[in-house]
Image 1 (cartoon, helix red, strand yellow):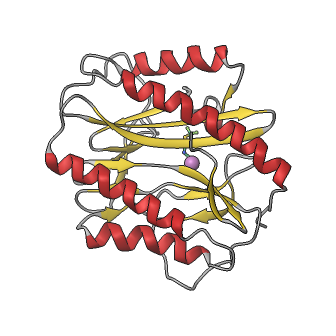
Image 2 (cartoon, rainbow, N blue to C red):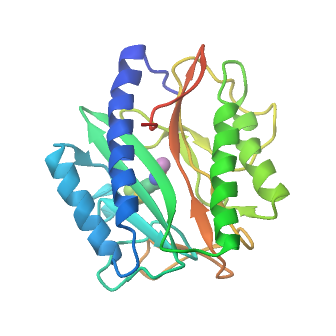
Length: 249
Ligand code: MF3
Ligand code: CO
């Protein structure tokens, strides 16, 4: 069952969404050559304490940290480590969740480290564009497949692959609610979007094939072919005035 939220609940999700995005925007500035992914985790830990919010990922199915930090060929769920040093030309995907007053916030972005190549710039741009095109389809009466197809269409048209093993999701009083929001689909298919639905839409695009491998740590998902991958995520509410991005500052 897809839970529709009241406007009071949407405002609570907006509070969580803004806090999670604020911290992410700060931590993206820390993604500099020489920093370790554990430095980024430590910064997030400090900020969630200062803001008196709960990190949503730590302890989720045993995940050990607040932040997921995934470098280059890593798609999602990279575990922060003091041995992982960011270097000029890398990209790093940063994914964070918080809980505020029982409501979840979840957002992600991929940051360039120093100066990156034109081809990586294009990967980041197209991934973010595919998220924006999907958000544009979050309208009353549209179907979920319209949202999912928007990601796939743009990604594939630009020569990238979408990751199928991981999906976006409904979000509210739980991190993962129905429906699943894949990064592929058929326009005109799936549930009709209703007022108060809140979707976490999170395109993951690979330069090469879409296939995924999970490392021995049981968390880090990497591209099977070693190519780079980017990830952007926003929470979006369905309203009669169109898409309402809850993770926008
Ligand atoms: N944004 C991801 C998701 O919605 C983050 C989950 S990471 C985990 O699934 F560590 F919490 F699993
Ligand atoms: Co998510």
